[in-house]
Length: 489
Image (cartoon, rainbow, N blue to C red; front, side, top):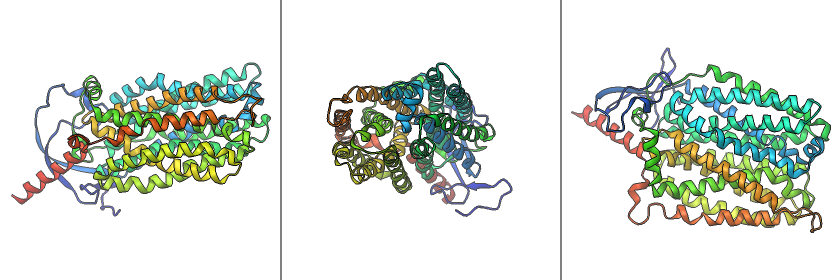
């Protein structure tokens, strides 16, 4: 992208995100520049119309905040799976069973639910920066409590649980922020890729933990060193949060300038939207399954002779291939909004198929099957995340984006915790062949993944095609047409 010569380093906006200034005559209210929510300035009734010639610009500084969201989402997920990646060594270090260490991941997910309402409030009232700073503070405190606990004497496991819960509290403040941030700083062409980069950094961090932590821990006594390394990384990643810009001086596009409706009206609108449920339910089920699966990979594979390193590579491949595939699909779908619904309808059955196929992967006792199926599962799952999140935002527009985003992630975390408990309970005992296998758990997740497949397949059917159109894209198109008509006259 070429940059215009400007002292401020600003990039002018056009509907295709190319560099020439655009002014459109639209109905807007004052654009918030202090991080305050637009919803705080509006009434539930239609706003008073004011016609302005508004210069819409995107700013290079938006990449600073996006990079910080990427860092925080990565380290918070690394915190989540710190002990799951080395579950056997962690169990020996703490003097508990492997199943007990699973609770470190489970409590992390449930902590997400408790702090989600605070994340919605802070994102709505203070904007992305306030939410990002809150997450950084929680990560700093939580990580160093974990380290203090593993180096202390008595009740090390209890102290780690406290630190783990605090890092879990941090997650919704950054995981729910990407849609809000992209809506505030990016144009239509950039929103899905921006949301993809920031959101998918979360599982990428988990992949780093699954790949790197086994290198750091070859025996139980090395657990404190691992926790120290993760704490240092988290601290370094958190510090820049205090210096990111709060909001752009001017909106990036007409749809971003629209005032947001109040939270109560948003919830009422979503509760009566069929299309919202058709995407929301599969999303939370697949996020829940992915979280539970990621937490249990080592326990799923180890009964069949796979090492912790093998399990870590399966987890890393699951995420690395998913990130690569999403990097291809996200920009393509962002530039062709008509592909959003067909893409969702294609990806959901593929995800279900991958969970079905994984039932037969561990008994092969060869890394080929887990690698191949994990790559398929990661590709479809990661491609779905940003597309579904942005689609939910469009369904609720002009609601503030953090509402649907937080609801979707919170639902996924809730189901992830529930699925994790159920799948752990389905683990075989030591008398089975092989001992402690998790075939029943794999069948359970395949059934759950298949059960939600029909829902998105009926999107737009029955004369409801108008309900699945991208509202923000339509607003930006209308504004551009109005500008063109004005220029022509």
